[in-house]
Structure formats: C-alpha cells, structure tokens
Image 1 (cartoon, rainbow, N blue to C red):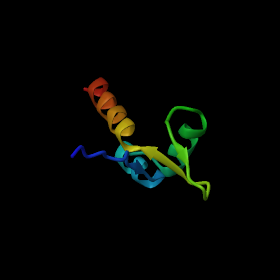
Image 2 (tube, helix red, strand yellow):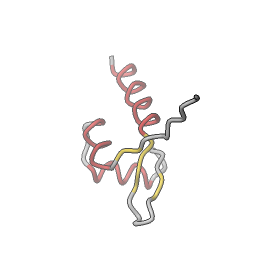
Image 3 (tube, rainbow, N blue to C red):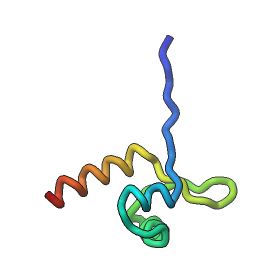
Image 4 (cartoon, helix red, strand yellow):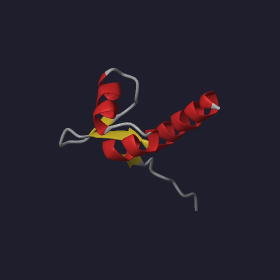
Length: 64
C-alpha cells in the first residue's frame, strides 16, 4: 500500500533556530516574501520544513 506523507511545517521559533536569527527576523523575512509560509486559522505562520531545509543547505553551500 502506498504511503502518503503529509508535508511538515515548522514554527517561527524553530526556523529562527535553524537559520540562527531571531524570531522577529523570520517574521520580517516572511512579510517581505523572502520565506514561504502558510497561515494557520489562528493567524500564526507555519513554514514548510522541506523548503526551509533546502534554503539552509543552499546557504551553507554558499557560505563555505
């Protein structure tokens, strides 16, 4: 039987920790369109984990 995996989402604080910036920076980047996100029914941002990790990989490659 084929198993479908739901995409996972990260909270602002989790993304901030991964990218080593403050949660306010993450919120600003999301507002500026620099980071992809969805809004929950409660109005909170959720960031697609796969895209954030891909960005992290891309940033670590360009830094080294």
